[in-house]
Length: 386
Image (tube, rainbow, N blue to C red; front, side):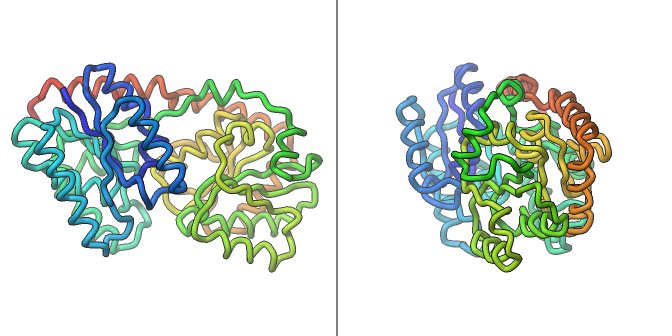
């Protein structure tokens, strides 16, 4: 038996699909991993190359597919389609697991002939581009494309309730809900770290309360609102620590310098020790404009932090307003500033919120997700009738 694990970029495979690859292998599948290993990822080219080499050493077939991030790059999309279709024709996969908006469409179109010969296609939607409050153009384009593609998809996986309900009502295929992409909750809960040493490593003051934000520095993640809220909160006893890289780095850095808070707002860049950083932090702030089900918020919950976040799809699945933290409109700088002060000024409430989040996040543990994925793979392997 053969299976294809496909995503647009290497980081999506590495961060969200390692366990899925292991499960497929346990079930007896020879797994090929395909994605754009060269560009488009939140990983550097060196990190993506290292991951590709790791997969090869483990014995997996790897395939570089030049999936673009921009829908205007027609040439790369055509090349990606041809590469995928040729590979599928040659290997005759039993299961094709694809994800990401552009890549997911290209992969399912390429799989159309293979599906007629018995391949089963699984599409994992990490968050549809059409959602409550999304621009009309998103609905006109992405909704209709996804609805059309559902007609030649054997199973669509959704990881938040809003997407699940909408897909269940309107798509022409089997739709399943899965509680995230898999988080090792216990590992984060059990993480121990020396605060003084970690602060020295990050080059941040040890004697300040730490407000943590994790995510790509992009318009979608909206870190500018977190910075402006921190400035409005006017807390000399705290710092804001941003972990991540992205296209808005220079703009955000300029915002910090314009407001003379470079001694209280720190950019840590890309980090692979987020669990440790969570354990030295006092609260988490997440002002994103669009999410599927944010891993960063889940990590903060597992680490026992109260969470300030935007009131959007995905976040509302995770955070109960007033119990696990506070929620505001993604552009509400004053609201977030108020939330910062409400949490940091009340340690008892802060601790209770953290404990509440730890109790909630257990249902999103990777053991739950992996059990669900195993059952779905098994059902696809049985070639059920739709």
